[in-house]
Length: 502
Image (cartoon, rainbow, N blue to C red; front, side, top):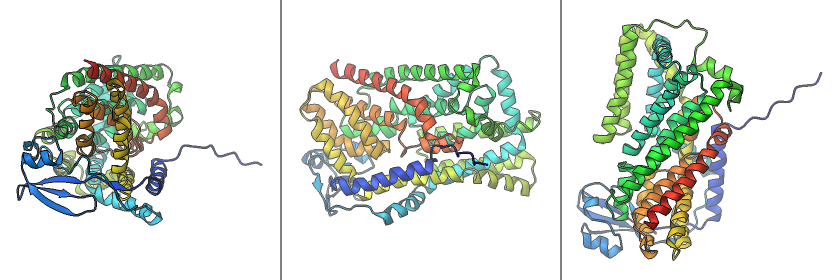
């Protein structure tokens, strides 16, 4: 009797990230090390502190004259009022440094350090998981999903339209991204009950966020901080980005609906059809009788939903971040446990079990951060930026704009933080627009489009975290998203050409 051959499968998110981690370490042996001088404003003494590439520091007066002297074309008030709070790269200060290649020891330690540095995000995820565990076991989700399914019967496509539009609105206004992690366990069952697969839910949430942040309008973490670092008002180029947001969102919604309706008619066309039974067991609890949608269950779901509204208000207007968001949901979790009617032991057990279900997601976040640590410690991020500046100097304006889109896509892989890439690259890249006769808002748009485009697929961003929550492999996502990525890339290029030539 011969053994059946084991079917080859795509590696897990952890394996993909470790491969990228090793490749990043290899790059530190190949790419010359180097750094720009960095400037940061110290509000306590009202002075600028400049850190030279060799690590030495020097204080300067916190005045516009200092910025002009250093070639940083930014209004000093952007530093004094806190609009720019991260270190800014100083033009023409790049220096090669002694190589600091990352070896086996650093590669092994990087994921551990990555977990340390992302513990705030991980705790947020665990608290959300705990709440979901309680809601699941109370029957609130099952009753709510059944009610929503009845309400959208025959108009299921509205789920895609509404979710994608609302998330894109959050992305363009305040950079809604990591916060959407909490929504997947809630919305995946809703989409599955509607006859779609988990990829449709991922696309609506993840692409809504990605398109919104890619075509940011008033997002303080990209549009505003990048414009400030480029020395222009964030309203410059705003009309182009608003038009891009509307059109790109429509393109994305149409693309998702086309796939969704195809698999609704024929489930075997789903890219994850082989996982259909497993995912239904995980998310739909088909063996359970649908409970009654009682007032208690409605109150629990209403409280959970209201928490997201409060979170959006806090992040967008009160300066909240993960400490405040996690605190909010911890309080909400305690209230939901009390309302659920469960005993203390049962409520705590369900909360801990729900948190445990997302441990894998938390570890993925930490390993993703490890890649950036290797690149930063290897001193090659600034070297890659410096090389990019030499490529685009003296080009035709239209070609320059398109090439900047490509360059920011590459930089977006190595520096996935929108605010981090903005303050590092804008003081260097924005003056290049002057040399080819383009307004600097073109550079801001190229930065947003390039980094946003790379976010569709980059393993160092949120996509692998997202996929691990829903048990979808990276190759299936690539197969789904690559055609849309090509369409959005072409559209972004056209928008940049129009902005550059008008």
